[in-house]
Length: 72
Image 1 (tube, rainbow, N blue to C red):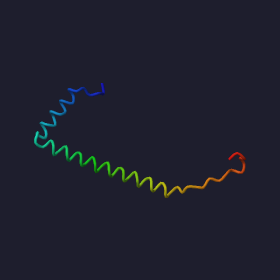
Image 2: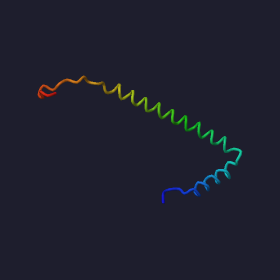
Image 3: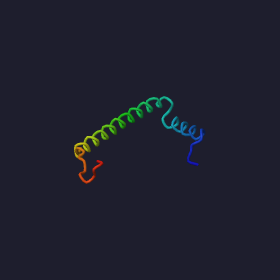
Image 4: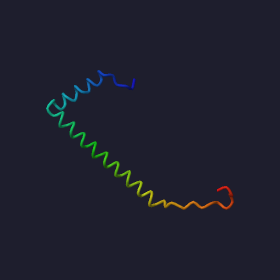
């Protein structure tokens, strides 16, 4: 029930052609591609910032053997 059949995609494509016109579809697709690329770049930058902030907040502690455990 949640999957789209091929004829569903045909209807979606037809609606896009009617809304934007055949001449404007390539421009709209290019704009959408640029927007997605910018969004992906920003998300990667935010992820990188979060990782750097986490690394600064939690300094690594050198492993010290536990004197209570002889096998450590």
